[in-house]
Length: 175
Image (cartoon, rainbow, N blue to C red; front, side, top):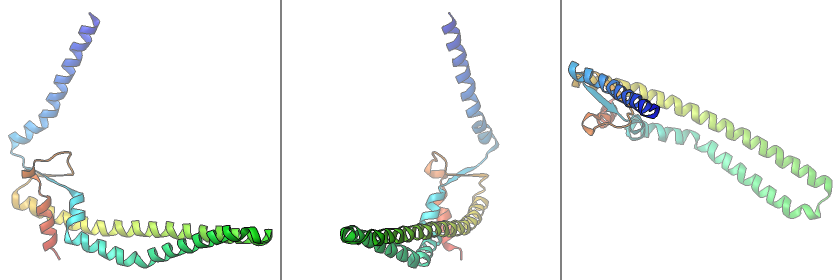
């Protein structure tokens, strides 16, 4: 008997929850609210501004990336040489070279961390510039089409309410 009563309460709860989910949608339809959606990652990846930003960052960090890669290769070669030659060197010489390699490796790791932090910071700055322009484009599109709400990255959006391509076109036309 108790199982029946508890399942009845669960059914009532599900009915109430589904009503609450549909309620905002019903109000939006009754009020004539116009809703659109935008895929932000697509804007950050496909707009001319984003592509130019990516190229700019690659050029800006290419030299440091090459230096880090070259340093890593030198350390690897030195470690291999130490492994080969360790049998014929004195204990003191082997320990000195191991310390040198460890110091070089720590320095390389520090440079890699700095590189990653700097790259992330610059990437964030560039994305902020794109976001600012994209927000201007979104507002322009919302005003033109009399859209009340634009949702960023919804789980699903009907293609007829997706304004991502229009935002990219607007961004591409901005200078």
